[in-house]
View (tube, helix red, strand yellow):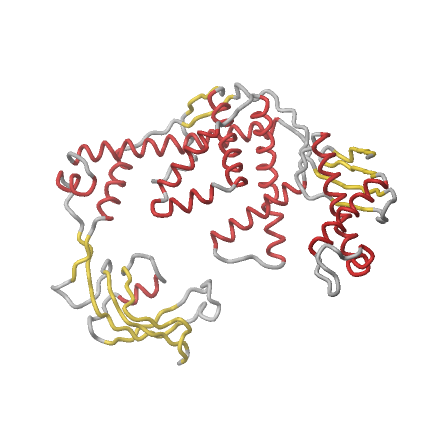
Amino acid sequence: MKIDIDTVSSTQRKIRVELPGDDVAQEFVRAYENLGRHAKIKGFRPGKVPRSVLQGIYGDEVKGQVLSRLVERSLGEVIKERGLKVIAEPEVDADTLEEGRTFAFSALVEVKPDVDAKDYFGLELKKVRLSVSDEQVEAALARLRDAHAQLVPVEDREVVERGDFVTMDFSGTLDGEPIPGGKNENYSVEVGGGNTLPEFENALVGLKKDVEEAITVPYPADYFKKELAGKSAQFSVTVKEIKKKVLPTLDDEFAKDHAGSESLADLKTKIRSQLEAELGEFQKEALKEQLMERLVEAHSFELPESLIDRQVRYLIERQQRSSGAPAEGSSTEELRKELRPHAERQVKATLLLEKIAETEKVEVPDADVQKRVDEAARAAGERGSAVRQYYARADVRENLKSQMVMDRTMELLLDRAVTKEVEPTVDAPDKKR
């Protein structure tokens, strides 16, 4: 086998392979022998079909199979022998294949670039000095209290007020025609809670229980349903139940019953500790982002187009999943352009981390991978067996191991960085809790 490899760019190699006629002939022999053992042709016993008959029926199919096998096997050998880190399907251009004659093909392959990662220890990072305030503790306590509130029927009035929780039947019309999806029974809503159209909630204030009443709801000019935008619809509404939220008393008994704490003071201490832990994670993630920005800006190398394209597709799919609506046509292309710089940064960061992990010999033992799988299975509860089955796949497990290597490499870089605490700037966004 003759091999020539040309460097097209730092991320592309052109491989030219020439196979002798004997190798080609042997592959044809193997192909027809295998076919002969399985082919069922009328008038011949299994395994006794003459090759000339097989060739007349399956000649083109066998030729295609032989070509694929010759290319796949020889190209795989070259890639392994030369240590090429191929990251995408090769573009193959093959000569005409003839049995017993020399066969040649070329393949354009995309490879990972040679990354020269340097000066990655001792990076100077700024950590914004943040702390958990008493107001944040009280806000978290209020959310916990609200989560344990009870809805009780209103007995002393029949009229809806803001803040009530009402159950109702309604049907809507626009210009006398029913609104698609504008009818519902036993629909529950918090009046003024902002969980549905504010104009609709506002119109419920003052309605009487068990009385069918008519309300007019003006839709905003920018309403997402164009057929309703800027128009007013009429609704027939019957309030069937009015409830109000009753909050539990914040005392030691509440702390014992709902939070497993010894007292209200103990509960506040636990809440503060939890918020401080969350704040620590927030600051750590910010340091990681800052560190990667420094690394990415300090290194320059060509990025493989296939990795960028793959990351762009991932970002688009993730955005579409979060929005629940697939992008189509030109909007998709615009989104690709918008997300490409972000994808390039992520690809570059990943290649740098991989190189640093290789240089610093960062490893993750199989036992640690299994521990992570066990933790995920326990967290999944009843779905634990499905989680274990998922991670039993070699490719999935290898991906998990690679991610753990990346995480440990980042931890190594953070440990060796020089972190300086700074006061938050006036215009810095507050950490919302």
